[in-house]
Length: 178
Image 1: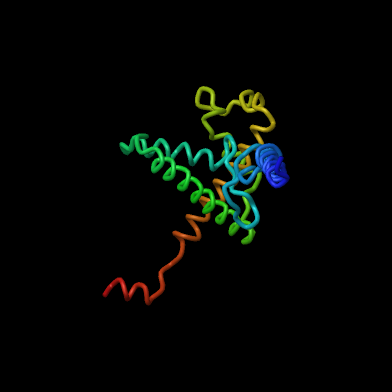
Image 2: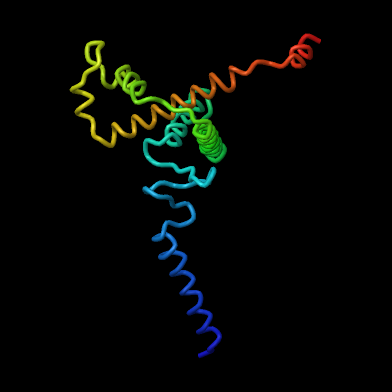
């Protein structure tokens, strides 16, 4: 009977439909590509949680670590925050390292990747590399494995060469001696 109430109801209905139908269908605020959840960005690339990703592995590792240290899920909010925040931070640091290594021109050869794959326990049979086990893996699994190994090797090289390989200056040595 009141035109203002009628118009307000229509506007509210439109807002509800947009918020609960169109936004989730288009991916929403947390939506990412490939069905994952994007928690932020680093250098224009999404920090996305997807199955078998580095982020997902960090969530699992941190969960296991906190459980082993005696933290119970009674403090669920604090526990969840620690796990997800830690995994996010580790993922961003890894992305920054890979970005720095890419800009420096560092690379891993295909021959070195092949060598590393032959050392993986997933493809071992009687202590030796099994070509049959490797061939039975899906193409997607092989590609993911190669990319993960490449990233792991570049990250390890960064830590060994860049962080641990830096010689202290003479001023630093003098300061420590004092």
